[in-house]
Image (cartoon, rainbow, N blue to C red; front, side, top):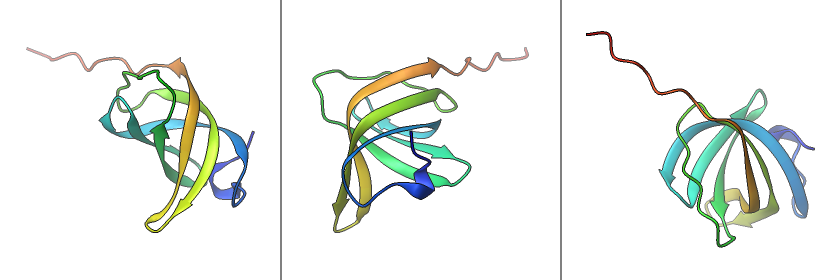
Length: 88
């Protein structure tokens, strides 16, 4: 298991963090105490996440022209964020 700040330049990695931004069921951003990184779900699964969810991602580091991200083959939801209750 790596921290986001200590990810190698390439290879298979396992990272854990909190979801800070959800683009869709195949793209989201996670953050830990060392930084944040975009995750692209490459497998056939799609993941319904909410901001604040705790996840573990297993995949490959991908260095591209706009930076680097993780091409995820597995996303494990440790704890999904609770919906915020409205106070009416």
